[in-house]
Image (cartoon, rainbow, N blue to C red; front, side, top):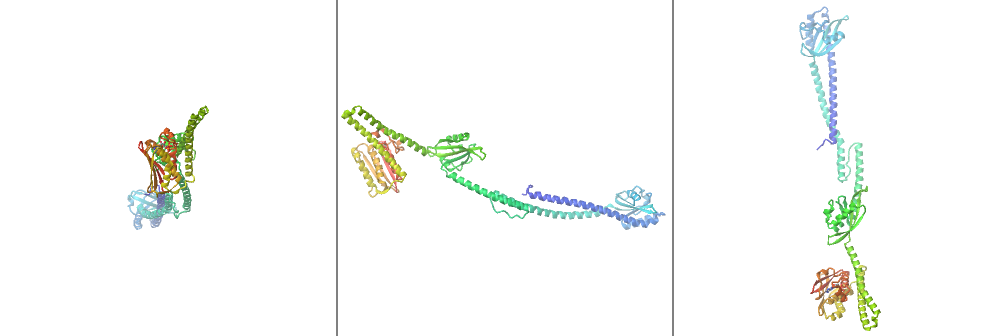
Length: 591
Ligand code: ADP
């Protein structure tokens, strides 16, 4: 797990390396110093021995007693574990502790001899051919009255010096190793002390990054690390505040966005959906959760919308257009497209705002149609009246028979105008009442209302010898506006009579359901083709215009029925079979 990059692994090996290099350097320096010191000591020691020996042989030099000198040398050498050689100024060896002087070379060329002759003492470390090992030589001059009479040379094998040095070096090395171990442990401790608070801060910072703003860790560390910790803590606090603000603002925007009635879609330059609200998903009939990040072509199958999005992205100004949609039946949405820009003002996509205007456009159409229908309906009788008035003025008035006939026609058209205006006034009165204060409902006996309606139609029914049958329980009571319901029933009865053959039967039947009262008006008349049924309750809608006019219809009767029933919170339905008759049923929910 510990990677090379970790601070600990950067610190610890460096500490260790520094310690080891220092130790090696110290060991090397100490051992070479000791070696120098030891060599110097050995030289002094050998010189002292030579000086001591010098006194023993000085009387045998002049006159020369080589044999005694050699004997003394051998004895002293054995005693002192030192090789002793006595050399005459000529270089001739006269005594040696280890060898026979007679077989030895002339020593005049030996560096220690030359050193002793020149100064008082000569030293040399070299390989002895005689003994075949490295030796340290110290030679001192033996003088008598300023004359050199001999050179005494002492020597010991270097191995003994080296052995002694080795022991010391081993000790230094062992000490060094122990120190290195201590240093390693100490470095470990120090490294840990430095890195562990940093580790703590690191994992704290990571938890901050994950959004867990727990309290800062209590770090036991240097001033710098503590200061860093403080700064981080302040930063975390700052960050938390900013995140809180950000989250709050985002939630507010989300809430606004999702509670908007208008559908909103944000798209990027590639036409991928950045965001979309619930209203947009509902208007377009797509899945909101799967929309984000997908192209608009994938999300909504509507080429008009795709084109609108493309136009918005390419356009430099806001654009507006009505887009047909076919979700929930045929509909129309009004789209507003604007460019989406980032903080620097660079275009990053498009924002589409959609308004479902299906109902609005329908209402606009109805209103337009209504105005033109009203004008048309009124224009016909007025034109007729005007025509007959002119005919009368042109002379027909003088002929009493014509005059009587024309006045009769004028009267009929005036009646028609009156009927239309009366129906229109009724319609607008019902509309206004239901929209503003609402209609006043009173507990009423349904049978009484039906009887009164039948009474009103009595003359017309009798005229066509049509029998009206009522079926209604006397006890049936419901909270309604009795005069309005009577008017609705009269309108239905009026139609039933109008579109029934002479001698037919019309039934009025009231029934009480679980949660509603129904009033059905049934005839056995002409019936209505299925294709007209959905539009039957529209104002001025007539299956057969000429026939309706001829029968004195205004085309508003069923529209008035619908409005009355809607004002009561109910609905009116029609069932009809061509040639067999129709049944109009008013459904009134219990108030
Ligand atoms: P109108 O004044 O022409 O009767 P309505 O609004 O009352 O106007 O009726 C609209 C149309 O519905 C009528 O023109 C007629 O064609 C048809 N209609 C209404 N009631 C019946 C019915 N009982 N039988 C056949 N057709 C009917």
